[in-house]
Image 1 (cartoon, rainbow, N blue to C red):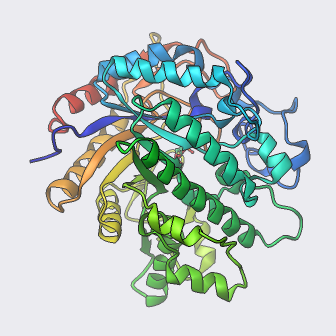
Image 2 (image 1 turned 135 degrees about the horizontal axis):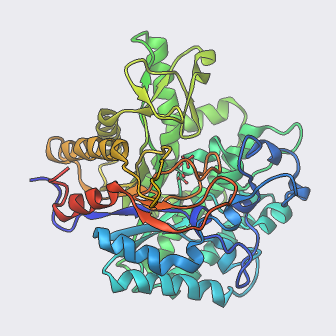
Image 3 (image 1 turned 120 degrees about the vertical axis):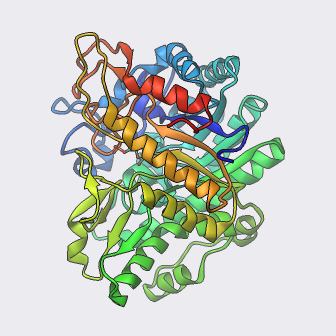
Length: 474
Ligand code: BG6
């Protein structure tokens, strides 16, 4: 019983949150580079597309991040020491195509990931590669308007062809878009969208969504053509919506909120737009820019597995004003009085993890892969840099237990589990370093001070033991 033999254990990161080296070896500027730490993180973006660049008033954490660009060997060795059998990472698009629309890729960028994958291979770590994790070259935003433009599908297709061919035999597991549903909530990160004055924002978002869905199906198609061994997954920012009360109006609001997110996975997994979405878009006069062949492409190229992140459940109310009480991974929610919250106000709900997994599995009946889960917390290291993070151990143990229940008691097919940020990294939501998820402490603060030294926390040996016992000893 328990997790099957060969269950993949590991951790997950994203290029812009760990690599740094933002202008090295020919890399071009990306959307994620120009978002600063702090309250201005996303607000400075609105309406400034032509001027989007660095300024002197802000600190831009992605420029150096935790310098994994130069330290990946040390970091992967630490992951191997914990016993990782998988490592989820993402490609920085602008390392491969600095502007996005070049004819030829940047060889130095390709070599970087090739070496990194070979390093993983050395330790029998299976890479799980996210092709785009909140990442698009700035040039594609400034010149083409980001994913609102169908031409970006062609550029992405080219990127995929290069990646699948070059890394054939080194990478088998691919994810097309990180948390694709967050495009609706963070369109600059999710799709490189900067709105123009007066435009119908919802329409722009669904046009961009269509383009990403087409791109995702194309990627799936090409991945399978290049190597039938390739396994391609979609990626949902998961977390079920509970109704605030049994009032049918709240129940309906929760169903609607869930569907808003599942919409993307419905298309990627079932191969067609679900009727509820078509009806809603039609009612609102939003025309999905279907081109000849799109429907067949979606239908014929559904994903092999469903991956998702889980941090918390959410609560929906029919009264939209209630929905601003809290935040759960960029989605607004009502505060749930039955749950405790983290220092960043994300509510902790291990049983909700099992509920969410069941919901997804009931809906799609494809293997699941949990590719993010974890606790963002303030760590206080002693003079040697050691952190006694029992709170993190508890959070993860409770969630792994719940995941185990979903497998053992509910019969869910699960491929693996990667915790978010096995090494401390830059927060996507806030740009802070102080929101730490890692088993490995990185000496760096929110404004770039620190030695970048890596130190194992208490949770390091704990996770090692969890992996060694295939999840038996929590
Ligand atoms: C997910 C993202 O939304 O949650 C990650 O895929 C992100 O990039 C993670 O870092 C945790 O969110 P945050 O805001 O705490 O970094």
